[in-house]
Length: 294
Image 1 (cartoon, rainbow, N blue to C red):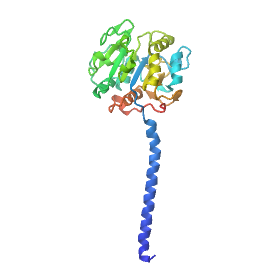
Image 2 (cartoon, rainbow, N blue to C red):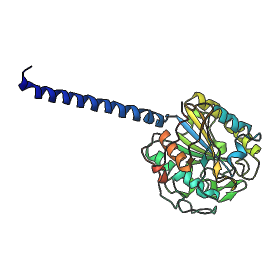
Image 3 (cartoon, helix red, strand yellow):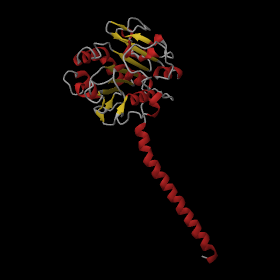
């Protein structure tokens, strides 16, 4: 080769080597990030039901002979072993789970109905053209804003605090549909003060859950839907560690996750499962629940 061409050849070889190295680096970066992105991907269920139970620590329910049904859900679904409530008492936790913030609420006193306008799960779903409802056991009538009535307590129903949530989206539990295909995209089911384990036993709540939502759970697994059972807070004796179990389509059976999650992570996951592009309050910076999906 003529000597006059050697520098160009060297430059060409160097350029080719650099390009090859850059391509290899790009492939390496893609290979490193692709599995993480894939792991973070969530399913797109047609229906999600969230059931909120009351005032029991993880160890009082998971593994307890008093809760055979919840433990069967855990065995056939996924359990978050490091799931935590945020505070005490009950009501601030419900607001956190629903809106990504306690909204300054620090007690269980009845709130001024419709006083808040902050974004929340229901308002986000509605704005996105998706459906929402709550089914509230012992609520005197659809949309009733009463503070308390028998075993019903408004403190467990945060939707009443927001003026951007339609009152008529709060149903009684007797209105829970027998045809599960008519369920909203996302809904909350709130048992009354006995059946949520607040005033009655773990066994009472577990039996209620099986009797009233067992058929839905079975249906959900075969119909691209999901059941999530969680608690508002613990018994004040376990660092606010609570049971949270997911069951249904796309949930890996028997899976456990030791990642630390709280109500904001659950809200973020509910928003993303519903395909929402907005995230309320602290859910905006919370991570999704991952590692449990098949």
